[in-house]
Length: 441
Ligand code: NAD
Image (cartoon, rainbow, N blue to C red; front, side):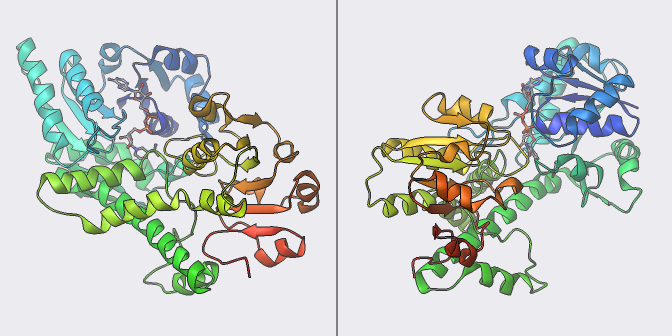
């Protein structure tokens, strides 16, 4: 089977690499010429563990190729995946211009039956728009070619994307034809052999499933952050409360870690888009509005702690930062809490020195030379007035507190991810601030 994947970003590349890994012929398409040129030269545009090796291996085997030419890619392809971006529009709804552009391109160039599968996260009703845009192009050409549309939302997590794709909790597929079901069944067969289920449903439900899943995850994060803030006020310890509630099998221990808010390319925009879909349908998604409001507040909780510690005067202070990406194991900075915290620090007149194992380059697109970047975590601390941890990279978990203390002008740590043991860190002579625990007593 030959598959074309249009949009060679996080989702498109991982999808393409994993399909080719199980022996399927894959062509990845993108409009970004430089990106395709780089990929053809073995330069992978994103950091994702295991991806580079997998892409190189399958390119060598001749099963994976990259092009900007969609017409060429569609020759002999039976399935086309749309995995382009769906960024938020000004009103919060998902901007479908890239998705519909691909549908039109497909209509312009396909010459045989095609199953057009939307992998991008798109609002309920998008498949109908995809169908219409594609049919209009076929009509313009005055040709009668059969096609189906399907929705196959992607649930991979950046940083663990390869594993998530190869061993998915589930694969959700929305479709409305037997031919499409047969194709999707055989395409995903290699991934379902070990019991990973494909859940077939109608297209609207599949589109909704993706948003509902991300909305639920964002809700868990905002819920625990809200409770964490209250813990701090009333003298409870969120780390203990989290364990206490997570051991209830109805709640579970995952995804209830307090922190500095959710970020990334999905949760913020998908929560916004779902609220928008609801309001377009005259329904008020009250829970999700609160989830957003809590997250907005949470992104500045650590800045407020730093500001309070320095008595509201950050002018001339130097803040050493460990971690910039929105979560570990990725260089993705989209909507990262670090963006908001660093912006606030700079506005308040502080200097910022930062280290991230892989996201320094991405951060440069946002901050340019307004902050200083380091390739080594301890160098950041030389003459810094405090250390702030914004991403829980494993390498930050067991640092030398001796060195940290020696390098900082004041022994104070602001831990936005609760990665340290409060008692241990205090024994090491630090002042310590984290989320959801009042550490000043
Ligand atoms: P991305 O921005 O990393 O990549 C999108 C790519 O599409 C870019 O390379 C862009 O140049 C290309 N593109 C845009 N228009 C095009 C066109 N007309 N033809 C060819 N290429 C075109 O985006 P991403 O993070 O991979 O996300 C893609 C979609 O998947 C989004 O809808 C997102 O919400 C969803 N999603 C993302 C993740 C994630 O973790 N990143 C997870 C699940 C779902």
